[in-house]
Amino acid sequence: MAFTGLACIERVWDDPEDPTHAFASLRDAIDFNTIVSIGETTVSGNALQSAVLAIPFEIAAEIAARGLSVPAFEGFAETREGLAEVVDLSNLDQRPFTEIVQNRLVRDASFRFRVVEQAYEGICAFTGIRLTNGRGRAEADAAHIMPVKENGPDTVRNGIALMKSMHWAFDRGLISLADSGTILTVERGFDASAVKMLCSDRRAILPERDDEKPHTAFLEWHRCNVFKGAA
Image 1 (cartoon, rainbow, N blue to C red):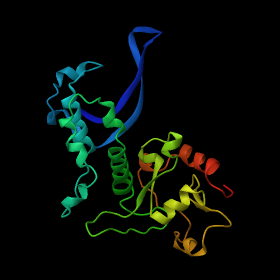
Image 2 (cartoon, one colour):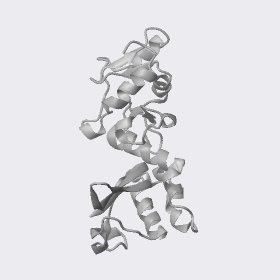
Image 3 (cartoon, helix red, strand yellow):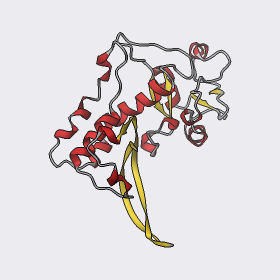
């Protein structure tokens, strides 16, 4: 038994076909970087046999801090940068728990880690290049396929690891991706030197696991709403 993520409950309503059941609508869901075992918390395992369990804010904050923490690379303890606020969540006094979910800094850091470091291992999907800084942190960005402003979720399958120049071109519709993994570019406006940086076979380097590869629904959205070339 373990905690695998957190989300805000938007509303709850009764099941019209079974009065003993109910449905819950969730929003702002975040998958944890690290699954938090019940044994690592003060939550009773027996209590989790209930369908709904209310737990104190302090315990919820501690679970969130454990689940969203970014593991340090071997020999580079400083790579936990950007998540210092997470470990301080337990010190907040009566602060609404929803603010943890909506903390953009925490969400960005968690999304980047799951996409760039875990799924793509720091490799730019369009070029195959892996650059790191002096502390071992990959320089690739975690690009949203469907942007946050369009209600795109912070899920791995809505993300792709791209070096900054490719991220810029992707967000401006100069480059996109077919469902097959083929890299698409506009006929005009994409610099020839940038084209030479692309993978020689024009196929993106994607994660091996199906549950980490870009979802075709998000790719289709990008081709239809952002990409300026012929899909």
